[in-house]
Length: 426
Image (cartoon, rainbow, N blue to C red; front, side, top):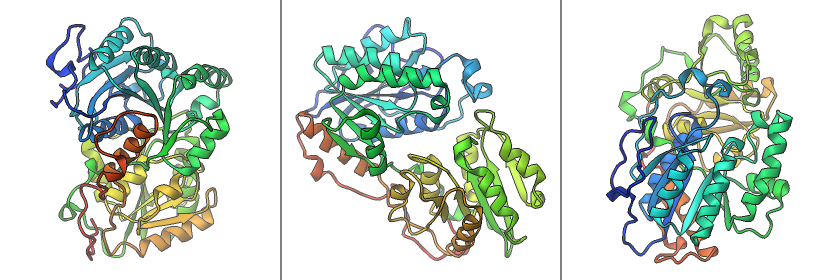
């Protein structure tokens, strides 16, 4: 496999075959992963890259990136569209990418998929904006004899679900896509129940693949920035949206002792400026720092390296990238017991679960988590486990396998250091 060039506004694959377009001649299934690209950067962009690279360690993998998801003016993060904020690179052949208006990029993507000759097309599902493109890619793959697998990150984006016509479009138009689907992947038992309830996929083979680690942000413990004596530094990280519950954290924080400091790092989406207004009005405003933007990868370590406890007060969630970043850093994390987050945090010694939308309970949980800062906690997640789940699904849907999914090795996060006592925790 060869690394793909840095993504640009033009597809990295051309209409003519190149050496990186040709499938590797090995006795393993050929897979093409389709998901979010770097142009409209979000958490799914990172996941698509990490999954593609992880699967590429075991299978013959290529990737198709969804480049321009919708007209720029409609995107919540429109000010940063096209900026290269991620340091991750693909280690598999890539077509970058498909635009929402389809012509000619979708036709080129179909040709790329045809040259890869996949046994399986894996679609990352998170937004209805990609639905028409996914339908075309899935149909083209099925006509070539490939099976289609959909990995659901959530049933429907919460922002889209709030818009009646967008919600109706997605609910109706996803039905023909589901009829082309041979199997599905979800991140938790909670998600599987929600998916079956929404779309009645009881007869479709399914696998639960817990989210892999986001250890590409992690640094060694020695690089951790020590805090002032007696100060506990809290961090909220991620986009600021109605379901994230940041307003609950602001209320809870006002009741904590003066030894607690809070940093909020995130870009406002859906016009949800209530948390920012509450921060400005808070009696503890002098102990709160608000970084109201989408930060580049180069800055992520800075904020997690200056945190003692990560707080994620979500009111609902299927999965959380910030939770996995926190666990990969070995930090204590307060997380609400909602959706798939309970399962995601299972086995993590630094997790403190608390009820959602309950600022009083959240404050108590934060003080509990502050007592867990004397050690680095081991991240139980692994991409090897994710690959094993995919291997089991491929076997179940009839894709020939050289090695059983049950025989693949499962390991912890690739950056893990044995937990150790350290006052500066990292």
